[in-house]
Image 1 (cartoon, rainbow, N blue to C red):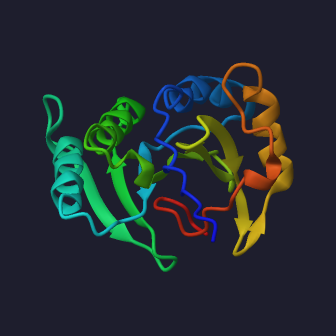
Image 2: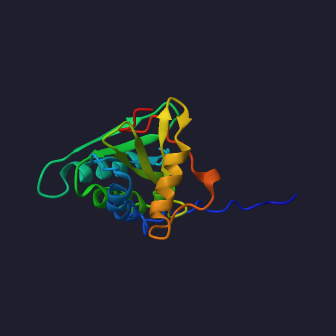
Length: 185
């Protein structure tokens, strides 16, 4: 009989989450994509007894952090994921990082899947930049219609930000985030 040890879950990499904010002015200048101030953290809920308290602390931080009360809520999607959604400008990414740190500081960083910020153009285009916590990389997701991706826009976004932020090189990991908070599709 061979016993195999399970490897520990990969901890969240918060080092490059600021890439979401660094990419924003580049995308506004080059592609006319601006952030309406919607962003979120996606995670798996677990059965740890401390999890609800940590989740509540992260939510409270997003709601009460800084001088002005801000808007945030917890949502559950049809795929079994939980989203901690925030609406604000200009401190969106800073606040998402702080909320993510609450999970990481309480040994629940492995539950974090991604952070995302919504981008829109004056036309119909909508996209999101997705930060993968396990890999410390960013990729674009641009839905064009229900279950149809705008690959051209995704590659245009990649071309603008590549070399300036850590873009996920394995496009097979550019997972769609259908129905993510703030997205039409």
